[in-house]
Length: 212
Length: 224
Image (cartoon, rainbow over all chains, first blue to last red; front, side, top):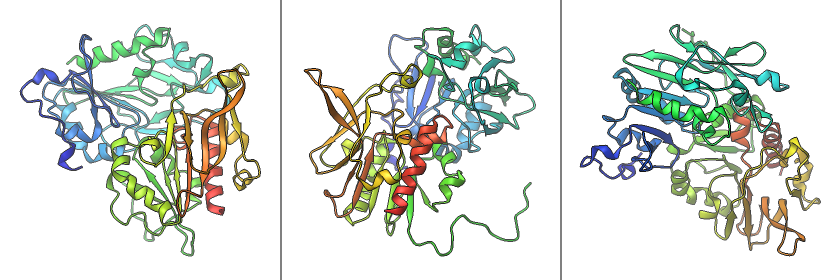
């Protein structure tokens, strides 16, 4: 990408970058909304290489983000995690932009039981979440996930499972001094306004991302 | 490790003549769609938007701009997209690409996305139009009635194919805007514009209607 894509300099004011950045396809607001804490900023994926991540503790990779560009920046992302950062990967990881992302497998489904979500190993992001609130949205299944993962790291914990065979879905694993959380569906933050326990995932994800 | 095969394999047939390009943005639904054998059967060349360069879209009879691309990159390459129709070929613009910001005379008005109408028999207000048009040899109602992301309007002499029939101020149903139309008058070529986003929903394994639309759209543009 040309240099003209670089965001305005933020070096005078290091706190202007939020502790957690949501990586997007086009939306950018590095500081996040004031008055919310901890703040979540937004960064256009194509500007990510130009942002000073020194004070950033966690990244949410949005599910719609260009994974070819992410793979071209594998070293940047890997370095961020191995130095102690936390990354939450949303969507189906189809390129190898971090070590350990596993292989996403499409589920053939014919009914709600094929897509039912169950909880797996305990994890703070899903603490207190009723899996029925993930399985159904206004009575419709499939919003949470339509696939499972294979070939995940040996030291990963599987936090949610899907379908009649309880196949692995979401998982979390250590990488260097940091950790990677992978959710094989649309952004977990998309549930923040749902009128049930699924809304808990957003603040709990932000809390988890800011810990080291 | 995978051992390299002592021969090369490709989905491109040696004698193909009609040429199709699909411009994608590298998102997972796009990458998944690009691996679908039913899509590969149309032998598209895939062009990654972030690397699109001068001349890349030359020589194609049809260029499909996949849905939900990065708005900044779409704006940067809009002249390349418009040039496809201006030179006499077919440009298909799929949904959520801010088409009203880069196709002359096109207006867009947002509408909430209704994922739930089918559950309780609610009327989604989506109607098909222009039933004598050749597109209906390929499109079915199931392939176009699922959901949409706003309505398109233009003063140009276009053929509305899918519309939203909403009550007007007096409560009488009227066509409030289009979700799919064909325009063969604004340029030397053909514009097919929609607010449907089939590569996103097909590529995320989410919506059978979106898969139907993607496949029937490919048959339509392959045959016309």
